[in-house]
Length: 166
Image (cartoon, rainbow, N blue to C red; front, side, top):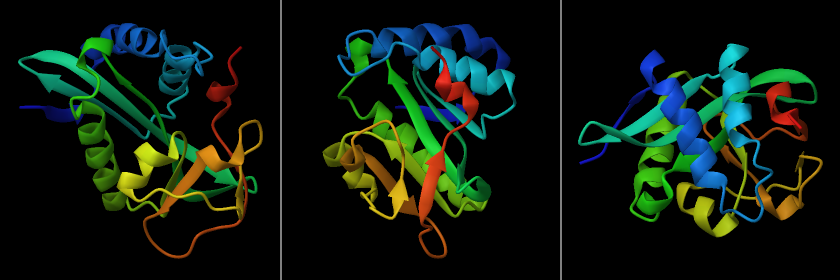
């Protein structure tokens, strides 16, 4: 049984190692994902930092942080990175983290969530490409949104500066 809970101070080093390991074999990765999470935490920009625990072992992590649309904070958040130990991937851990995080965003209440990722995978959560939302620096079909309340905004989305690590 997987339990999802907010990160605790004693989880920080494990989250870093987990994130490095999860993205190491990924050809599309810039290998900066652990630095991004660390930077978001240091800046106080981790709106949600959730871990998946099974048998007292931390097996996954997901981060949600604020984004701006047209340089305005609009109660929209970015999902990611999502990390699961390589040997534990494809067991529903990432899905559990994402579903729990999206439910917590609704309670905030958040207006919506964006991400950069595989449309086939994230479509199961209701994410879809919206040409009215622009994220520069990546193929547009991989940039997706999920509206949680109200209407979908239009314009350019920017993540926290922690995403700009070299």
